[in-house]
Image (tube, rainbow, N blue to C red; front, side):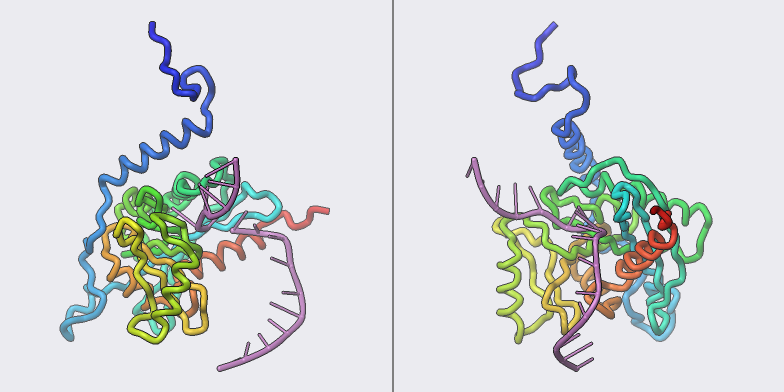
Length: 271
DNA sequence: GCGACAG
DNA sequence: ATCTTGTCGC
């Protein structure tokens, strides 16, 4: 028999340490990442090229989010909404909730292992019921490739559900030398110039996404990154089509409704 | 050693 | 993520 090499980390002898978990999580991410597609890969169009063929237009855009109970922080409500972007006011045509108790902790860089199972369940449930509103693209409250290993929650979800996804971050995940103050400076510099967003290129030269001031009145940007099966340009276009406020409507509605659900379905009579 | 670290 | 009211402004 051989003695385990001195790695400084207990392996077979001790129960799962967080170190081991992280190692397995990294392997799982790298594994799934091989299936990641970061180019446009869908059949619909963003605008009609001819006067005919309206059926090919993008219509159903989904949004997912999870909110947590303030009393019991392991109690969470996952929410899936779908908006009809062809309707005048971005109508919500579908919503569903999933109340769960989460056991997996939040660890920066591993958000998907905590949240993806809940969100996948909502998608699968919808598919089983053969809903006519199944989303053609999904906006995720969390990053796509803007992630330490280029595989955030939006990618994770996109690959597992085989669905085009867009990552929407409300805070910057510091990666590849990107800093919040650096982004702010660039946004101020570009303020009077061409676009309302700046490209997030790190020290390595890799493009991770963009920081966008989605509303004129919002100084704080949102961080858009490719999730799965679409390009950054397409992601930006779709976000712009759905931005009434700082956070695009699909994820915003998911957020609002999941909080509301928790508020109503809680044992608020605890005295 | 110190700081940073999506939700 | 969550704890939290009013308030200044279009």
